[in-house]
Length: 352
Image (cartoon, rainbow, N blue to C red; front, top):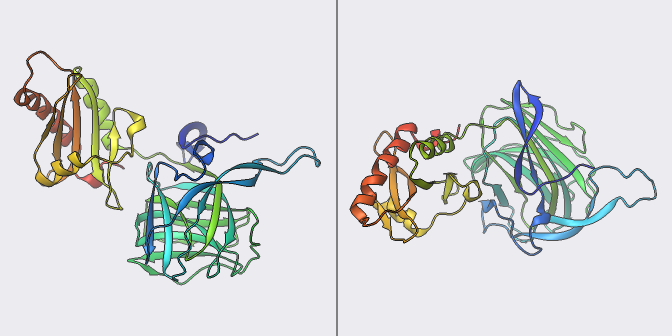
C-alpha cells in the first residue's frame, strides 16, 4: 500500500524532464484534531477574514483499492477542513503551503464538498504570487462544474471548464500539472478541461482554496516536482563550513503574505518559522542586536542587497569565549553577514 509521510520531502528515483524529481506528501494524521496544521499560512483572497482551517476526522478511501471485495473501502483518518462560513460572494479562503515554491509540478489531492448554503466548492490555487495573483482549479458540488480561473490584481478571469456531476459528501480527486506555460487540470483522472497555455505566472506557492461559505475537506495530497535551488540555503551551508566557530545561522525575510519567516537555516526543522519581534526591529532600524547568553554569543544582523536596501535579518550564533563583549561579538559577526550578502543579490534571488 502507498504510504503517506508527514509534510516532508522524499527523494525518489524518477526523472522529470531529465532532472531528478522529488515528492512532497502532505499527511494530516500527524496533527491533533481541532488544530491548524503547521507549515501553512491562512490568507484570504477578495473580501472578509481568512478561513478557519482545522484538522478533522473523516472516513477516507484507502490509497489503493482493497484486494478483496469484502474488505472495507474506507478508513477513519484525519483530513484538512475549511470550516468558516462567510457567505460573501468575493470571499476566497486560502491555506498556503509555505515551505516550497514550485514551477514545474504535478499535484494530486482528494477533496470532498461537505456543505454550504451559498457555495459548495473545493479547489487548489497554484503559482501563487500573492492573494491577488494566482491560478486556481476548483470543483463545485452546487453548480456541478469543474473550472479553471486566473486571478490578476484581484480580478477573476472568465471560467474555463465543463458541467460535470460532483456529488456532495463524496470524495473525489483533482490533479493539476504545470510544465512551463502549459497547464493541465484533471477531475477523477480525466482531463475534462482542455490543456491550457498561459504565461502570467511562471512559479509560485500552492494552497487549498474554497469560496464563500463552502465547507470542504482535503486529504492525501501529493506533489511531484522538480526541486528549485534555494540560493539562501546554499549560502548558509557554505558559510557554516567556512567558519568553524559558528553554531548556527538563520536568515529571515518577508514572504508574499507579509510575514517575516526563516527562508534558510542551519537547522532544517526551523525553516519557515516565524521571526521574533527582534528580527523585525533589526530590519526596521537597520541596526544589529546583541543577544546575551552564557551558552552562546548571538547577534542579529541586518542583511542588505547590492542596492543597499535592507531585505532580511540574519541570526548568527557563535561559540562563546571568556571575556567576550558586545563589541567583539559584533566584530566576529560582521564578516559572516558580509559573506552572506556577497552571495545574494536581492531577496527575490534567494530562491531560484
